[in-house]
Length: 70
Image 1 (cartoon, rainbow, N blue to C red):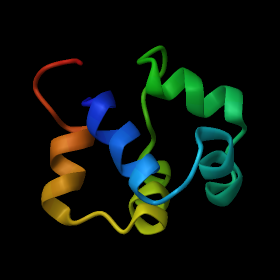
Image 2: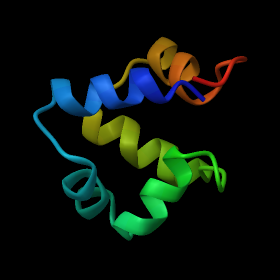
Image 3: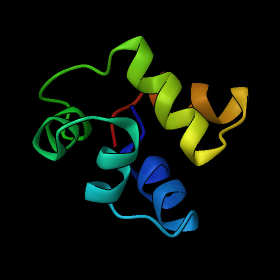
Image 4: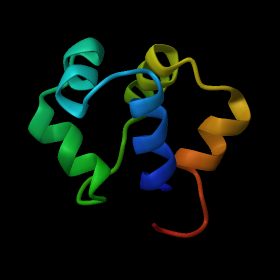
């Protein structure tokens, strides 16, 4: 997972992590846990985040399926 890219996309959309959590229907503690790599994102969560942030397929792959951890 590329946390830096995800944070950049959240900021680009003018959102905060708590606001993103609210928009995707996820508890903010759960979202923080996922972003820290403590637990994995589930497919519906990735889809919801992608929809809210208007991510392209390429960006989704770059963020959520990156080979290296940031």
